[in-house]
Image 1 (tube, helix red, strand yellow):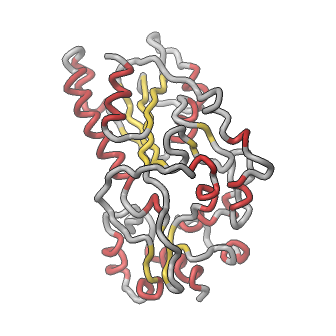
Image 2 (cartoon, rainbow, N blue to C red):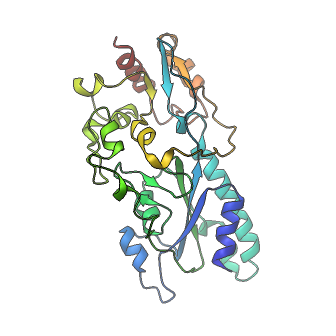
Length: 296
């Protein structure tokens, strides 16, 4: 098999960018890329991909409407997994002819929004660079992407971190950089790390027992998702077409007062199958977000 064919198949599947991370050398020794990622996976190679979800082009919300961030308005996470599943089937059929173990389904595992540190892996193989706001910034689609990875049972030559112009995005930003200046709560430290105890997105996802008053005061009209740092990033200003995705459709805005009136079962039904499926984020968190946004 050729790495170019693997990358080409991922691009044809609609990913904006794809790279290979070599996790083990032929003799079983850990590769330099894997050491840079500081994580061990029991597989020779990893196909790391970026699925674009595009810019937010909707007008501002109405007085009682609350916004859902663009990355959550379709279930792009499930879409990325679906596309990688199709690639895995194709690879098993094609490369399984060369070696029986390459046809085994268990060798093709998918990671998307998982405990695996996807951002360090993506930076290690040059899918993008780690921005000052802690997000991966890709050359093709900025940070407006969903990261997903597929394990491969055969060794491939790995890609290295971005360098040159592509590797120096954030170095050209001023002090403070636009993302840091735009953060409503000052959560962005500017060194690639986020002060989670100040991050609106962190709390909106259900973290923290309670939201500090200073964070709640800057919450704005958000039902779920804060994209202030991405909106300010110069790498996200050029048009980025979103990948086709029909699953988990949610509107840009939802009426918070209407949602608060729904019992838990109806609230769950409203978000079922979406990126906000209440199997992982509870009705209590949604209600907390609404009350903070509406200041009630």
